[in-house]
Image 1 (cartoon, rainbow, N blue to C red):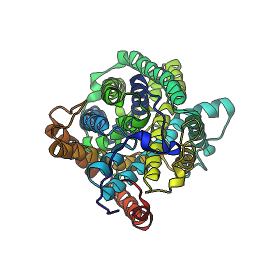
Image 2 (image 1 turned 60 degrees about the vertical axis):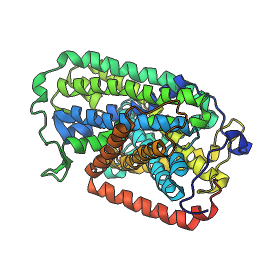
Image 3 (image 1 turned 180 degrees about the vertical axis):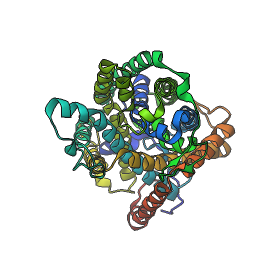
Length: 465
């Protein structure tokens, strides 16, 4: 096939039963999957990283990142109902633009999901480690990456293994447990707001923008500013794209996919705004900047140890919902690329329970190695680069289809499509530019490696039509 050939979407029933996913999810499952993916490490841990880069104006960083993600989410919703197939941005790019572009986006998604799962596992370990040390006496050297002075991050590897096992049991069972844990997580954030809000002090917001708006290099060699923070905590908002990977496993996708994508995004923006404002108002940002557990730290500083323990315990219980959602998305991206022949087709087989066990195990090994050896900030920044590329691709696909097939039936239409699509594209590009220079270089290197694999393997074996 030619590198610019486009994939057609046929009926899922046309696929061999070993390559066919089973539709079991309804829109509440999808909203739970989205909220579970979005509300997690970003607000529970990365708010400390963001505060270090932007000070009190990290609130503005959340607003900017949320606006760009909301525009991208609307583009995703339209494309998801037009192309209700698993694979998310990779599949949309294959259908609308062509094989080579789809490979680049799929390769970027592999980077995104692998690193997100790893980053959240590291964030979970940040909350679990103090509890494990105090309760069981496990040394911190076995719960931190080598770069932070440890040997290996065993809790991060452990939680990845648990989630992998759950996903191999079944998709619907995983979604049901996810919904329960999402409730636990939301209640914990409500408790944080209720306890910390009385300590809100407007003086903690001054100066509001100590490091400026754009990306600037500090005396310590760290890039700071509102946009530098937004480029990192952008990680806190995405997750709705994992819903798009569930298209083939969704009942009535034309109705349920838009509800899941848009509904989860709106809910999470409201939650984030409330938590971020209360956090930076309760204490000077320097108190919790770069802390692996900033919200729990704030509560301890406010002399509310019971609330801090409750929040940390809830994070330990509920953060795996983020790992589950992104791990799910990663395995489905791998699955579809293998089913198309761009990766070994032998990996695209499902078990009798309808789950891609081989791909899940393969994914678990990759993310466990990353989570065990690397710190949170580096993982999150590189994960964002892959996500930004995918968001740009989906917005471009939506705009192309508006011109190529303006009269096509759309169960969901992105409002003010040129404006929303333009904000998503330009906003994501600006956030990419705002990422650390080393991150941009690593992302380029990753895609050069991917291009080599495509030319040597994928291009010769693709079977997508």
